Length: 311
Image (cartoon, rainbow, N blue to C red):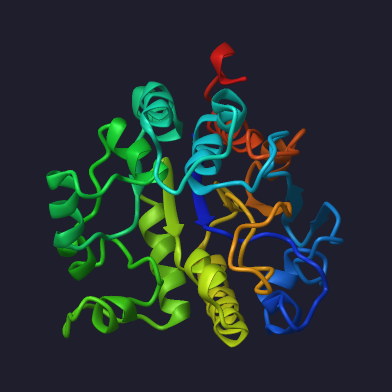
């Protein structure tokens, strides 16, 4: 089966062309623009097939009132089911018992493992994260719960040190500035992207979760949003330079809007960007309109059948 890397950006939507509040308007992002026909990632950017990529504005509201939330949005991405509609509401940030049950029953990690493939979540987590999980003081996110329920071990501090996983901020700076480490690996943005490509090459399905974008969406300011997008653009340039598009599909998507409208500190109902790059991109994007189409598209590319219960 071809390889698939799912690059998840938390809280990134397609907003208005408002330079005062949307960092996508002023950020220098040549790599992102090259994937969308030279256009900024905005609300009026249409579905575009260009430069070996397909850009698809993707509905995150799923026909449910209220602002989309992380737990239900991530669960929809990973299961292919309209979890918000099943619950009757958008829910988050952490999954409740009903969402955890849906994720444990079926998700992309589980499907790949059951088919005899290799799956991984390529984020490294510090010891205190595992301590809080074990104590019950912290619930895993929908992404983390999906991996754990499939028997996919979460990467540790040791994996970060030996280059087997990356920090959620890409470069590893956060482990030093926020967690107090002094000797953890540091990468340039391009090196981080290249490392991610190298790691993903060892798995049939790999996922990397970048949640810092949602934090900046809630807190701002605009300058930090611009800096984050320019950092991601450089990471993506490194990733694409090392990605073998002949036998690998790279999918970028998000669970809800937030970063694209810093006039508010809450989530938005904007569509989110989904980008498919490389082998099988047309097969993946076929019929894609909302978050429930992500899992089905990835399963098609992997040659795994979508179950009746996925609808």
